[in-house]
Each structure stands twice: as C-alpha cells, then as structure tokens.
Amino acid sequence: MSLKWRTSRFLLLGFLRLLFGFRIIGEDRVPRTGKLIICPNHRSYWDPPLVGAATPREVFFLAKEELFHFKPFAWLISFFNAIPIRRDAGGKSAIKTALRLLREGKAIVIFPEGTRNRTEKPFLPFRHGASLLASLSGAPLQPAFIRGPESRTYRWLLREREVSVRFGDPIYPDRYPGGREGLEKMTEDLRRSMEALAECR
Image (cartoon, rainbow, N blue to C red; front, side):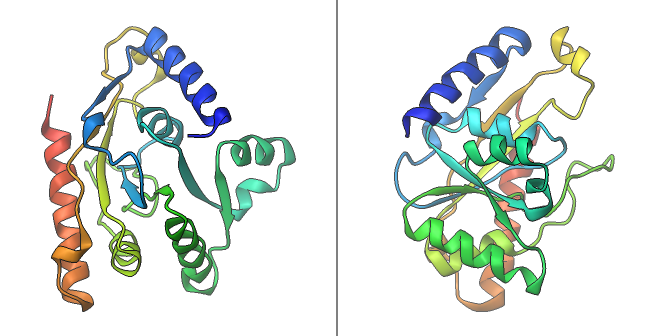
C-alpha cells in the first residue's frame, strides 16, 4: 500500500465511521497480495470511495474518459488511482488496461452490472467482463456488496440506514472450464455470491 493510499484510507475511514457508522465485514477474506478483481454492486456515486476505503489493500479503478475532461476533478480521481479508458472499440481499451494492471499484481475494481443500478431491483443483469478478465489473467474474483448509499445522505447521518461493505470468498477461475460455458458459470456463481451477501445482516 503506497503512503498516499494508506494516509487517504485512514482519513476516509475515520470520516465514514464517525459520521455514518461505516462497517466493513469479511475483510479477512480479501487476499492481501497478488492480482485481484473486486466485484461490488453499483447503486451510487459513493460506491468507488466506499470500496476503496473498505478494501485492505490499494485498488485501481477504470473510469470512463469523459470524467477526466474537467481538470480539477481529473486530478482528484487520478490521485485515487482512477485510470481513463475509452469506451469505443468494443471495450478493447478497458481490457488491455485491466490486464496490464493485473499482470503487475494489482487489485482492480469492476462493477459486474456494467453501469449504475437506478431500478428498484437489487441487481441489474450481470455482464461477463469480470469473468473474462479473470479467465484471461488468472486473477480471482472478489465478491462484495455495498449497503446504504443509495438512500438519502440524511438517513446515513441519522443511522437509519446501515452503510457497509461486505466481502465474500474469492472465486478462482481455474476451477471453471474454458470457453463461454466457463464464463457463464463463473458469472452465475459471482451473482449468487453477491446475492447471498445482500441477504446477510
């Protein structure tokens, strides 16, 4: 963990715990070293900082290029390990960048739903991107469930809603067959693990 990340995480965790009673459950399930793909649900703009604060190691985020057009914001998210990607060319830029980070032994965050969930359903349909990266790189998938930030912030302050991140057991790609069958099964198991985390209290 770099000094900037360690310091920022310490300060952010203190802020979140003081104001919102932020909880981290299952932190011991997260591998501390080696390539890793962290897969949380996505309902709020708060999700990246919450996952970053909860994960006991430095993480990297793939962010759409448009977020980097405003220079002050671009500096801020770049400081916290956001890396711009182009969404054209069938996602090849994202895959290439993610594989490079994983080869370097880093942990990256990928939202398997692919976009922010604005519906009443607990999850959107899962895409196969995270499973594909796991298959190509050998990196395990780390299921995670973020609870709370989809509600209004005043409900956090009043402690009417729990604000937490819960981690499940890693899913290892070498336990699955190759090809589309393996990707579909891995994605299905990832979804089931995240649904189980969502039901925990």
